[in-house]
Picture 1 (cartoon, rainbow, N blue to C red):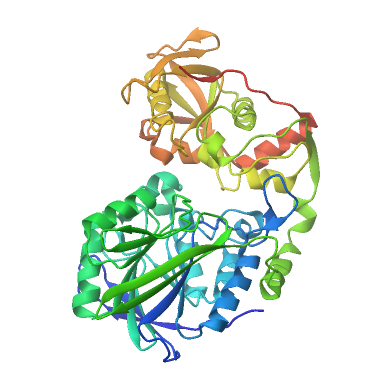
Picture 2: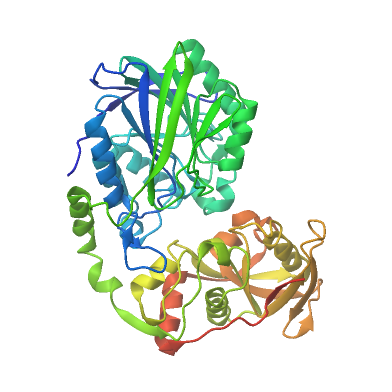
Length: 511
């Protein structure tokens, strides 16, 4: 059942230059276990309100609808000693959440009693004004200590929140990734600056410990597990880091220096639980684990009601069948960010044809789901292409196309959202070579790429604006801008063909 929000927030001034505000939350809590706190945490939910099928099984797992049940059980048992934290990238990712610009997820997080959420890069996907509105609607605090407005040098959101738990004061500060301008549409973060997390964290720790006299400091971060480890090693005084962004599943807490690091994976497949004992501002003991949101966990009826309310408006459109897939169209995260897939080829082909361009380039991070063999629905298209990107065509010289391909394979074999799927060209790269020298051959229309020639390139407006680090494209001449959502272009193509059967053609070859 739904839980009422447990805390209200009050904004106070802060003396750190970059951090203009801090939130102090107040609530009546039980006095028991005043030197203990249970931290329940989640990250990278990406809009998963509903449960979904486990791999190779019909069993339903994950989703906030199951996570809420686990939260309620623990809160009921440990009343007054629990705080609930979300490490970001929750408000975007599925049809029911995207089409209502994050509102259903905010309602669900309020219902389970979340106390604070770090601002992830995908929280900006609807633009700043929508994000600020969602923050106003929430009963919990949106945190980002390192996101500031360039002109005023003021924080866009509170940097920290102080929660009273068991008679003690818990200080929590939030961090947003500095590469946010390249992993959301650049227009969504115009006029903002994302400061160095390590530098900002040192300020926040000093402020919370020396001025606010908190008993425990928690970093609620969306910067990735590797950067969390670096942060722990560089900034003393952080007791716990609850992280996100890298979708890392830490089955047990990690200790780096004197800092405990936790992260729960993705999509609410697990609820993280960390119990910390502390005294005189120092952690004396801790224990933690991930609790699976498995098939055995019943779905929460209150979250179910939220889902039903919003699904009523979606059902008719999203269930409409518009075509058929001869085979599974592979949009799995690990695949579209590292190699050629049949779905990546299909999307790139559609873009090139719709834009009447020589070449098409589309980032793997923009492909968010697979499509099963069989009927293709409008909902399937929305799952694959959830972002509000439009189709554009640029004039690009060959040298910049090669530079874009270098960017595409710069992190290989690691996953990279900037990894490009291509149409109208093929290329080979050698991952053993130095960065900037990995692409060893490029062919366009079966001819070597001419680095001095101008080609027409279809892409999405995110990449065209320099998103995902494609700065070499952002100043290129735009010769066509459809103004039409890429998912709508793709849906029309599927509908016209009736049945699609793309394959792997050797467009991208690792030497």
